[in-house]
Amino acid sequence: MEKKKRTPKINYLEVFGPTIQGEGMVIGKKTMFLRTYGCDYSCDWCDTKYTWDGSEKHNMKRATPQEVFDELKETAGDKSFSHLTISGGNPALQKESMSQLIDICHENGVKVGLETQGSIWQDWFYKIDDLTISPKPPSSLMKTNFLTLDDMVDKLVAENVNFSIKIVYFNEDDLRYAKDLFKRYKDKGYDIPYYLSVGNATPYTSDDITKQLIDKLEELWDLVMNDEELNDVQALPQLHAIVWGNARGV
Image 1 (cartoon, one colour):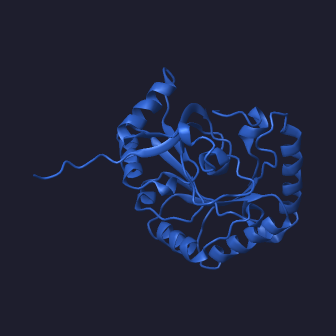
Image 2: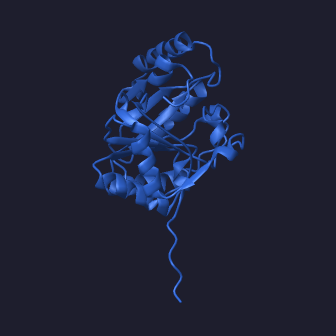
């Protein structure tokens, strides 16, 4: 007797929204959020360590793609939405289940955005409507696998996927890393949008961090304005953190 094929499930921690995307290529966009569980990195300054450090493993959910989409609709309630942001952790750890969720979203008129660090390739990246590759700079204490990253960028460019590269900025080493990385793909003739995003040095405090983030943004803007290597870079804040601080679920 042929075994019934199981529907793959998505590992995730939370669904929330509608909210406003606070960073990257679709900053300011109304969106729902799906935060997946698990990561192959352990960045020193990660603002969602609870997705991989085990502290909230007991809250992890497993659901089919259709169940996840139904939860998105239920969470939104009477508020309509046409965009979903998938974040983590690293959503690229999810395989066929994520591909099916993207299909369900598209069938229902919902576009899908994704942020991932460029460490794991999945063929469903080709289906993403706005894809942010965010390699982690030296301040993260992680090491970039450039063979994997180069292969990913080559594939996305070849298939005309709408994607950008975003680097989080904390210090001079991060800026150097960003400039070298952007030049790496400019030298290949790739026309990719490049972003620098202000890092949040205190992601778990309940204090007002607005001034801290604005001061850091002013520092970054000053660097960008005075560096010809950064002529084509867009330097942005974490807008959601300026408005809502470190509040979760917004």
